Length: 174
Image 1: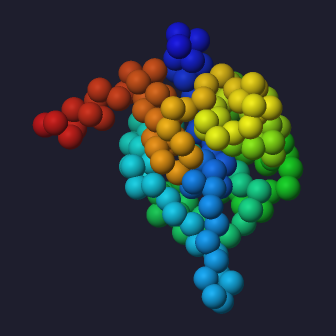
Image 2: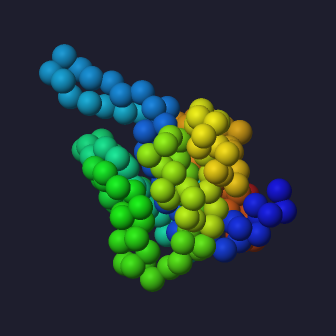
């Protein structure tokens, strides 16, 4: 766990996949063929708290849909890349845009499409539902499932490593 804390201490940008990470991976269609997803509210608060400590947030998702755009806007996520076919290219664009190095980034993913980012960032994280071929390339696997607190767990891990979590907690205990 010490190595994870050292890597998390360097994080300036948290990048997330969506389906299976910010959601439980299920996609719902109504009778008109419109898509919807379910997001975990505690993940959202964790992201806002992390962002309040100065860590930037980004989404790089293989799918583009309005549900995710709305969620990204509601959470004031700094960078949104939807409908990405090559996540390695999106990561390079994001690093160029922010001026950060891959070492200063954390990424949380859940499937093979995420490997081009997971194998490049300073802190690679998977949810427990990720296949073994993905988990083996990660520094950390969350205890919580995608769409059920995995993102919150990672946000708190980063804040604890950076020494900002106690200050965040103190605001609510005051």
